[in-house]
Length: 155
Picture (cartoon, rainbow, N blue to C red):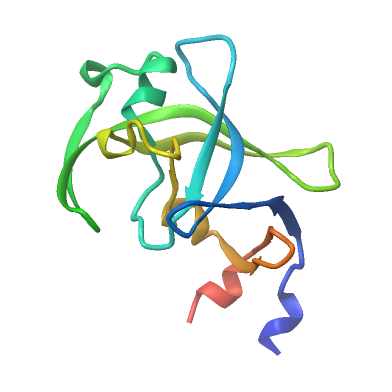
């Protein structure tokens, strides 16, 4: 049976509701340009092609537009928007009831000026979310991420 090989490696992360009907995760974003991480608030966005951060956060991390290696036009909820792609060192997300953080290293992200002066510092997109089966409990404010089995991904 296909489900026999399914691994139940569960990651549990706190979320909290914010205005505009968003649910966010507190995390720390790291840069190759500075020696420390910056606490950030990223929204969960199942409609976002990739993870993106605000231009303000990119500036704090000392990522300059001139360092971006690609420009892509994304079709967003607000219309077409030009974004600059770069690779960040790491995003760390603390787990509930665990001292071990989830780390995503060398992650391709978009620098999105749309998030400047907003309630969030960016979004966690499908590039991360598609790696997991996800259960969101809005009542108790947590999200559980289960690693997907390659056998389930392959038809």
